[in-house]
Length: 53
Image 1 (tube, rainbow, N blue to C red):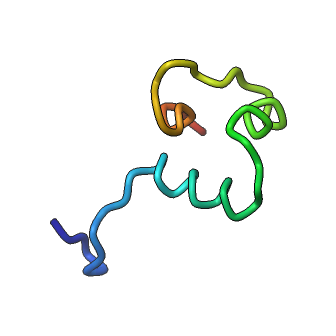
Image 2: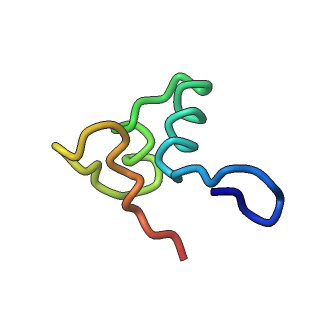
């Protein structure tokens, strides 16, 4: 399924994982930096459930 811009939708967790990999930062280190607890046992990037707002 494409969006208005013609690109397929991407899951926020996939986007976040790419950024963390590029910066060589672990999910745990990122969570501590922004002041949240990393979600355990969710598989992949657990922070994809994080709601920013």
